[in-house]
Image (tube, rainbow, N blue to C red):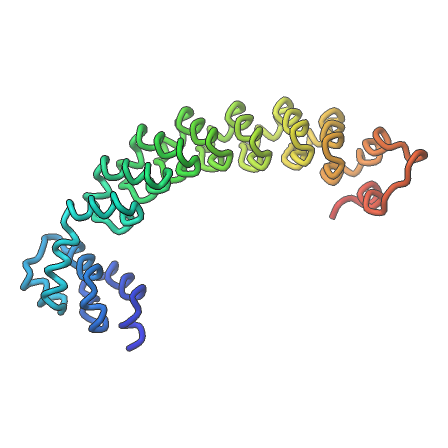
Length: 273
């Protein structure tokens, strides 16, 4: 369709599938230096100027400029000035440790997502990234997301990184505590076994009563844990089993001494829906 031939995003996607698709783009986009450079980059061997002009049906001036665009030194300068350019850089640039490290530092860790897979598995580079931005852990290779020290550094920067740790490390008591003490929502990502960890859950509800919602069914029937949760936040009552709700409420609020709110009555007698 004529409209699609002039749609830059559509043409970019088409080139990714077949670089010769540029031939069918609008005249304006066939003169777009960045698009020409991308189409040239996807060729197994660098084409001569004349060859590129012929096979892509693009202006020779655009090809000349595109040749400069694909030059490594040009790309190093671009990424140094704007780390986001790494997203569209040639593979050789995304595999250049020095370039990527600078981009990671300039982006507070985020540029790790554009690094080549080998560098996403570079322990020192990943440590640098997660110390800036813990959530950069999600871009690390699987083995590094199973590396205790790397995950600990990420979690220390932000509890949100805990969700990207390996399944085994999401079952680690100490890491769970480190994340949970920042925000109990981290308990939503722990291994099922930790939901039954009495010490962890008791500590959690003392920190935030609503953390009771993450406890195992068995621990939500533990009177000490339930009492501590309710003491910290009476809204935790909604996560207490129905059979214990009235007992917990009466222990803290004798019914003869105070009135019971309509909402509390519903929790006590009907359960939280």
